[in-house]
Image 1 (cartoon, one colour):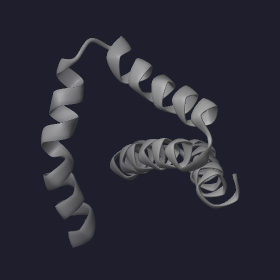
Image 2 (cartoon, rainbow, N blue to C red):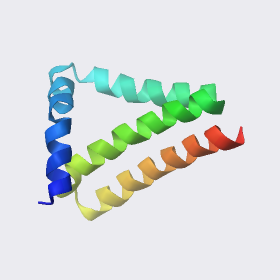
Image 3 (cartoon, rainbow, N blue to C red):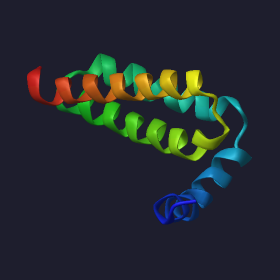
Image 4 (tube, rainbow, N blue to C red):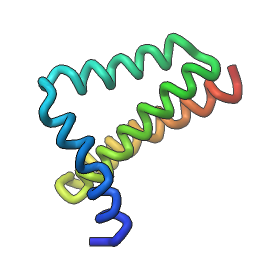
Length: 94
């Protein structure tokens, strides 16, 4: 295991534990809320909300990477990259 991965795991541990203690619907509603609000808000606010969502998705992707099969890795990476792309477009071109 790389030291970077270990550091991320140690720092994200409390967040992951907090999310695990919440009812299952809460993280889903949080992600859905960030996505919908980011897409509807547009402009700088929409871009920031989408980039926050992309950071959360990227963190979850990094933490779950060893347990994922290659197809899941590609799909989840593509989704995170699309959210980043849309967030950057909202920041600079709308």
